[in-house]
Every structure is written in structure tokens, then in C-alpha cells.
Length: 85
Image (cartoon, rainbow, N blue to C red; front, side):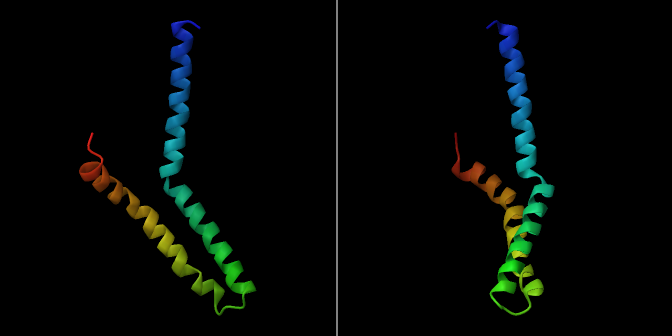
């Protein structure tokens, strides 16, 4: 393989990596997961005959959102103080 083709392959891979990273850190992804989490918990509460499934499923869903949204803060702390290259 010549250098130009190798560079094209590397650029193509870098674009894919950037897209994957953008998806992993997107708020859209987090809210989709939160919605699915809420839906599954509602189903569980409903079929387990637990009271008020639509209201009680909000608590774990909000906890999930708060935990994922705060991860960026912990990541910065980890990079600064623990991951010292």
C-alpha cells in the first residue's frame, strides 16, 4: 500500500472515531437511554404490582441522568490528579 492510501485510511478511521466519540458523549444518547430506562422500570413496577409505576420510575431515571451528566466533572478531576503522564 502506498502512503496516500494509508493516509486516506487513517483519515477515514479518524472520522469514524470522532463520530463514535460524539455519539458517546451526546446529550441525545443520554436522554434516549434515560427514556428507555424509564420505560423498562415502569414495565417492571407495573408487572410486579408495585404502586404508582409511572411516578416511582422517575427517581431511578433522574438518578441515571444525574450520574451520567456529572461524569464529565469526575473525568476532569481524574485526568488532572490521578492520570498523570
